[in-house]
Length: 91
Image (cartoon, one colour):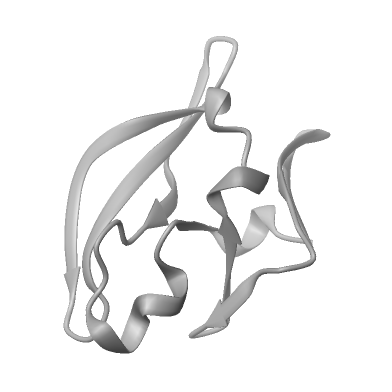
């Protein structure tokens, strides 16, 4: 699986975790240099608190294009240390 924006590879891994039709990429497979932490907040009832990231490539910023659960609840422990992307970026 890959996450791509305008021919720039954001993440690539054959070890994604599929949760609610979203592929969660291991953090080590994500080019974190392309992301800035967002101030957007969301709490999922069963996964916990989400941390959002915006893609920053040059002067362009795509707000809240990725998210992770830094300290997920027990039922979502398999996505700890992973990032998911809006579906249009995943191929």
